[in-house]
Amino acid sequence: MIFLLIASPFVGSFLALVAERLPLDKSVFFGRSYCKSCERALGPADMVPLISALVLKWRCRTCGAAFGKRDSLVELLCLGIAIWCVLVLPVPVVFVGFILGSVLLVLSAIDIEHMYLPDVLLYPLTLGGLGFVWWWQPEAFIHHIIGAVIGGLSFFLIRWSYTRLRGCEGLGLGDVKFACAIGAWVGWMGLASVILIAAVSALLFYLIRKRFKKRSPLLIDKIELSSEEQAGKESNLETSKELDSSLLPFGPFLALGLWITWLYGPIIVG
Image (cartoon, rainbow, N blue to C red; front, side, top):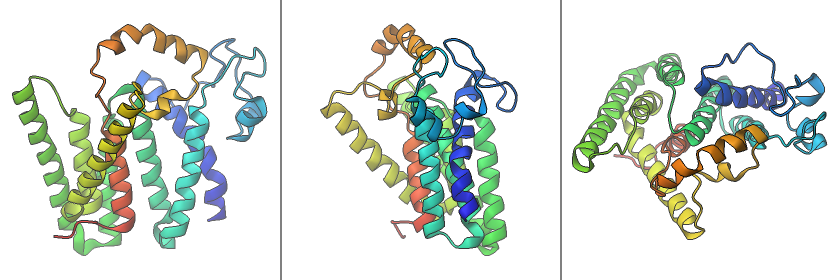
């Protein structure tokens, strides 16, 4: 368990890299990380999770350009996930919980920034949920198969109905596939709890954002960006202003609902 706690910030550093490169179709295994301003390749001393960023004050050692703080946030959250798993899960499934939390974290980060959930993560997440329950609780396997079907089908019907009524998409196909993965992990018995937690947390966030007139999709967008990221944000500013200010990525809230329900069980019992 000590190894997991020590390794988790390094895993978080990799997850931040995945969240940055995957939507851009860049390799997550090849290619050095570099300063977006001076293009200097980062050395080992620049990439120690959390510590390097604190020492360098989130700036490039060479040119002084600001780095985004989101990588540090992902590293910190990954450490938090590891601690959470160690505290509440039985030893045989601690690493399973950490893997699940890590995938949910990177899915949330991508959905926040790009408003989509990549299939390359969703399909393994679904298969992983079914594989885990087959190993850990085989007598419940059929309930999780049913959960995956009901989750995906119900969200597809919601998406189809909303599109027919409003003429625009209320849910993306990524959310439909995510619902299928959720059912695979919590079974049909846990779907209502996941949806309730996701809906309530999304509503609370929307009300808080509206109260403080925050127009970013999520609070994470308020974290300082690197110079290249900031330029990209500014170039899309006019387009963003045309978007409905109520638009929220639903993936992070579904991820929260899945995480809480998987750890503690359904809060709604039929």
